[in-house]
Image (cartoon, rainbow, N blue to C red; front, side, top):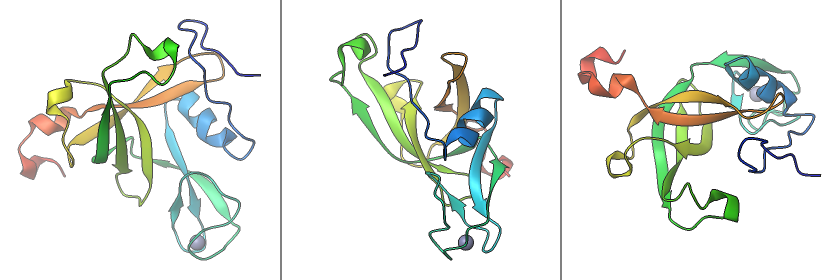
Length: 150
Ligand SMILES: [Zn+2]
């Protein structure tokens, strides 16, 4: 049975047992990824073994909720009728700062200002008691001079 966001009638993710810690962190306003204790690699999506060293000791680790746009697309045709009022909207693949992980989600803000390499922040959007979605928004730091970013 598909979970539905009661506020919008949109389908919600149904996390696997393996992904439960990721979604629990989102409920707490944190972005956590699996990190291998053997080699330090960050995984996403979650796995039972590290894809780099095949180690099995993976721990959930909080990462900075920000990154840069690796790629994006503008969706003009709603994938389901419940998304008709949202189009057009941007979906971005974002490199999460300090990790090799890339996460995919909606990116808010003016569509004509979306660029590869633009800095974004992760924003948390509560959709139900169980599900808090993560989305991206243009970073406040994008207005700063480049030398002020780090
Ligand atoms: Zn590893």
